[in-house]
Image (cartoon, rainbow, N blue to C red; front, side, top):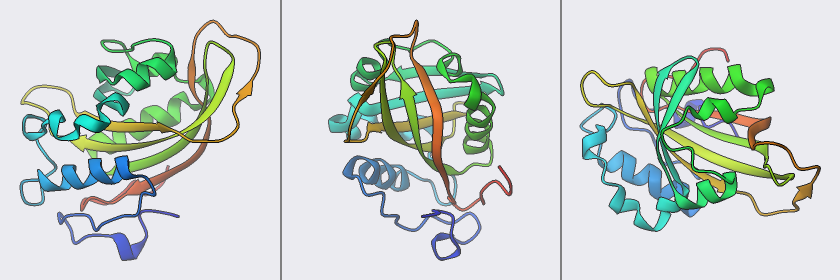
Length: 194
């Protein structure tokens, strides 16, 4: 399903239409994100109260998109840190991105933050334990305080299913395989080509 299909496109600058994310956490995040919008603008980070998402906080990540090669992790939920085998808060999350998908991930973060638009990604990661798992993440932009880098909020959920184990590796690598990346038009369009 391509979330940017014409029947889901809002009017220019308008609110995005409801989307079936097939996960209650994604729906909760998206609905709350929509509720704090100021007219057609994306929500300001200062209006976004993480306590409104208390039940889902373990699966939340907040990133500052500094530039094409740096997305600093501002906040990492405990479930995400546990899956990664580390807490990347205060670190450039792109340093744990697989080299094979680094450019694609960096461009996606830039597009989400600067267009702005949303995205739903499905990808595989290999953890330091050797476990390979599939996850889905919903990414939405937040307007940062004046003078700060563009900001994203994301929710990441591991998919149920068989877990594959390989040899242990030195460090976790996210996005070893990008299975899908669907754009969500929030009223400002989506990347023309990716």
